[in-house]
Length: 196
Image (spheres, rainbow, N blue to C red):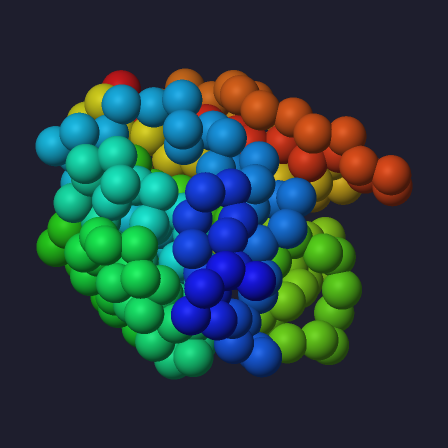
């Protein structure tokens, strides 16, 4: 634990909260994907922000950053963590991107609940195939992204990343897998979708 009760994760200081998802291999893979991008002067959105780790990285890279989460606890924690790291992010509570009707972004990051479980809280699981929130966002991406903008969406191999790629192409976007990490029981991937 770092000084002041904060923990350091990949160079970012974070406070914890009991009901907020703590960064794990999936968050770190998303962080790797973000660190390879030039975000100076861009407008960025981190959906399902949790602790705010991805939003904080975006802001540290010079992006005007908005973070959103359905959980009020996550929103509160993300704001505290941004201040702890000396960056400013706007935090909005809400479900996915429905409340961003008149805004478009250069980059959207989304580390969704991807475990294929039913009957559990949607804060932690992604429905029967783990795609429930991925598919909901895909339908909104053409509206949410500026021309030339991109989205980074975390998938597990059992979520059908190839289905995301096909659906993105049907919406007129380019899509490819840009990062992979093999774990004991599955592989994590970051799919990058770009609006032409």
